[in-house]
Image (tube, rainbow, N blue to C red; front, side, top):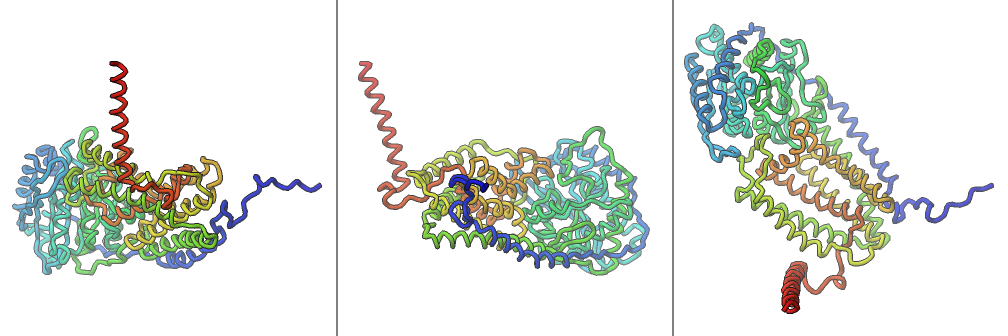
Length: 621
């Protein structure tokens, strides 16, 4: 017996039909183009070289450094910028450095500290001249949040800085050897308010011209294994030779490999550059810089749990490693630079350009398939122009929201941090300004939605056109990302490759459409997950990321790209929810424009309310 044929309702739609418009064969075939970039990536994996140790015996006295850390934390537990404790700590530091015969001077500057306004900050610089004007900088911040004694963050780094300065001072035996490079011992201020002191020092043109390398010491008195922080404020990486030198020397001292951010975390840091440590301003300007710490991605913030103490053994290991690194660079051998950006994979690195090529190649299957979908609409004579106009209306709405946020930002409603990231504890927003933006954005939506509401039954061809317009807009977003920061494709690729199949599931249940829609949010969710977990922000992560845009730390092109993405996402959400309508034609539109029509409706509604009250009063009379 032969099986009964399937009913028309149960028969699977034919490929290329309105129900299955996406060309799956073309999509799969285009993925073959990614093979060559993957091959290039495999050949780009190299092991960076490090400087050879000098063989000089370490003179770092961990016991003395530990005593200094305890003294600083005890005498000045609150060293928040602008406080009396910060002033006292600055004076104390200079008193510790002057007897050592170093050239010591202060670098005062003013900056905006969130919650305190314009504050006078002070960097303290101690120098030992070498045969060359080229400089090696050892750095540590001395401020803290004021929430605790700040022993580990960062009295330990400051004490190690003092001990290293003394070991190279003119009164020590080591001074009999002429140093090829000058040494700079930099104590920065305003680190917890966005690395303000480091950014001020790095912005000096002489710094970029003369500095060979920067080693930052931050929270180095903990019990955990040493950790290297690499990220900058832009998609750059520190010189691979400096990182490998520090890794080698730390592993020799501790007997264990120092940790680094994971491969995924490094990709996230390149796609959305951010760091809570002070190497970031230097890396951004192409100056080799690395942070050594025993903390995680988020510094401890000055809060001590239990009785404050320093792990003297770990303290000694890190201090000796840093001294050995300085000695290795003082041999006068050029520091191996390596690629401008990269991702460490174990003890090897993948060159950044190879990663960018793979990411761009992974975008091609989506772009080719989206263009093919547009071509199919053209062959079927499906009008896509009304769908593009619907996208334009959504784009104008989100642009309005962005402009409102920018205007309120210029008025100082969101605070200011001189383009530096706000403290990780600063996740609050002014409710008044936020409410004003919400009201004005709501008024903008009332105007925009007049042309986006369904007025009739929407045909399947129009729904397909809506998907096509949104996907082509995402393709343009992808090209903009490639032009600005190809690493940010890490967040966009999950979106485009999942949402490409929304036209294919449009005829299925609402739950199937919702599942595909949520799957496309994996990329933006990766950014929020990074801030929520790595920096322990939890549910405050979206507010903090928004604040990075509000204070101007996140670049303006990224905001423009985000607005275009939100408009495309809004159209796809409307399609999945069955609330999409193409932009109405001339015959479907009212004679007045959306603004005039909105004003007319408001006026008529007021008149009806007044007339109702008049009739009610007449009846009572």
